[in-house]
Each structure stands twice: as structure tokens, then as C-alpha cells.
Amino acid sequence: MRFDVVSLFPGVFDSVLDYGVSARALDRGIVRFRTWNPRDYSTDAYQSIDDRPYGGGPGMVMLAEPLEAALAAARADLEREGLNPYVIYFSPRGGRLDQEKVLTLARKPALTLVCGRYEGVDERLLRQSVAEEISLGDFVLSGGEVAALALMDAVIRQLPGVLGNAASALEESFADGLLDGPCFTRPEVWRGVAVPEVLRSGDHAAIARWRLKMSLGTTWERRPDLLARRGMSSDEQGLLDEYRRERGLGDKAI
Ligand SMILES: C[S@@+](CC[C@H](N)C(=O)[O-])C[C@H]1O[C@@H](n2cnc3c(N)ncnc32)[C@H](O)[C@@H]1O
Image 1 (cartoon, rainbow, N blue to C red):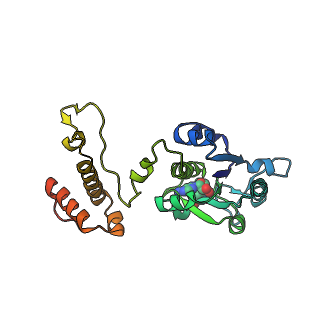
Image 2: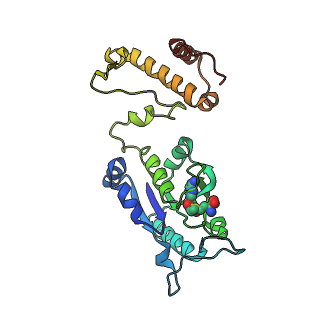
Image 3: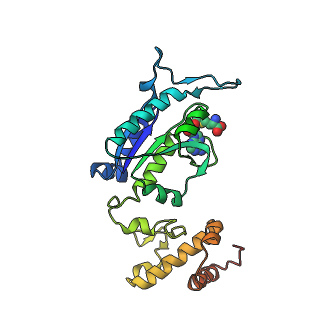
């Protein structure tokens, strides 16, 4: 899969992509990554990339022209490989990034990610060149770079061959519409608290049942909206009832 990022601060990406899962995916050639700086495509003597907003107000707006030229350069480079990119702009007004969106995007062969700065980007460029606007959440970042890194990280770990253990992605939060339950490692007793007996039993069926129960319970307690959307089988409902009974928790509307 190929990522092309249009950003005024391409150096931001080195610091994160050089580590861990992303670095391995790049090393193995599962992922390719290239940045395009709109400043390199500015045509005036000052290499301008922004200007004052029409109608007044604080801050500056990114110019359409250098962004269009950067996107055209990226597109031409991708076309040489027969790739047609899906272009995303990061914005607080976009659709919220979630795991379902991550999985959809992970099936695309090439994503081009446009990072805004200042007050944002001239609307005409967005209407002409962007397929989708995506938000990281209901807060305002100083730029789209952090959102692009979050999206790339989440997408990369879904690509075949990236995670050391392929089961990891299948067992983590959201994979089955549920949150992950608690996990433990050595020592067996820490500050007087023992690891749950079942996890030390070696009984794989009992461990799987316990993990599903904890997943259902954690989701019920923390994100009832997820559980309501997903629904439960009668067996799962039984496990959740058991979770509640064990903790003396009453019925909470879901
Ligand atoms: C300071 S923000 C601009 C905020 C914009 N004037 C507004 O009020 O919605 C600069 C850039 O950061 C990025 N950004 C800010 N918040 C974001 C969020 N929640 N999700 C994704 N990108 C965001 C966008 O690319 C945006 O153009």
C-alpha cells in the first residue's frame, strides 16, 4: 500500500514512522510512503503557501494553487505505477475516524492525505480534489499531520503481513465490535494482586470464555453504545449476566 502525504512539515512523519510496526512495514516494502510539500510548488518569489481570509478574521488560509500542484505531482507519480489515489483531507468537520473506516481504507491501494494548517484550506481546492474529509475527534489540532499519523498507524497494522502475530489484529478492540478486556503478565502476584486463576490454568476453552466475558463486560461498562449497535447472542448475554452477577452490578440500560 502506498501513502502520499501533502504537508508543510514533512519532517514530522520521520519521527513516528521510524519506529515499531510502521517501521517494519516500510522495511518489508508492505507500505511505501512519500511526502509532498506545497511550498516546493509555490510559484511566487516568497514561496507563499497561505494568504489572508476573504471576509476578514484571524489567521491565514492555505492557497489552493500550491496544494493543487503538489497533488498533481503526487498523482502523476502514482499514475506511473498504475495507482489511482483516494484523497483525504483532515478536518474537524469530517466524519469521525473509527475502526470500520480504518478497515475500509486498508483495502485501498493508495491513499493521499492532505494536512491542513493555519485556519484551513481554500474550500475550492477541497471541493475539486478531495474525496473525503476525516476528523480525529471533536477537538482542534494545529495541523492535519497528527491525524495523518494516527490514520496511517491504524491502517498499517491491518495490512496482511505487518503484525508479527496475525491473530493480534483479530483479537484487539473493535475487531468484533467489542473492547478488549484486561491483560496480565509476570509476576504472578504483584503488590498482593494475583493474575486471575483461569489465565494460569492452561485450559484454552476456559480462557477464551473468560476473555469474551471480560470483553463483553468492559464494553457494557465503558461503551454501551458499541454493545447496543453490535447486539449479543444468547450465550453472550449469559456471559454478560455472569459478569454483572460476579461484580454485584445491576441492570444498566443498553
Ligand atoms: C487550526 S486547524 C483549523 C481549524 C478550523 N479553522 C476550524 O475551526 O475547524 C488546522 C488544521 O488542523 C487539522 N485539524 C484540526 N483539527 C482536526 C481534527 N479534529 N481532525 C483532523 N484534522 C484536524 C486540519 O487539517 C485543519 O485544517
